[in-house]
Length: 91
Image 1 (cartoon, rainbow, N blue to C red):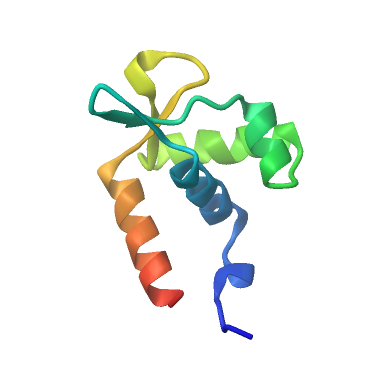
Image 2 (image 1 turned 90 degrees about the vertical axis):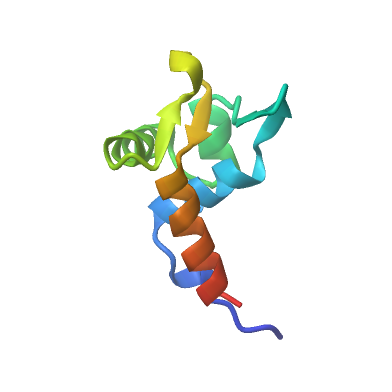
């Protein structure tokens, strides 16, 4: 059995990681086009909790709305840095 720190990561990291795993590339731009309900369902969380976490991630500049469109998210460089650090320490 492989050792992993992921079960100890908080829900914000779980949402951020989930966003990273579901990015799509269109014309050289990466973004996530999932509804909050879809994100909540994938992470076994309520929509209300997911909404709160996404708001916190936006306020912390880890994600931003992609082209100011509702329901589309872009992970910022700061968000990618957190993911790199957490995933690096997870191996």
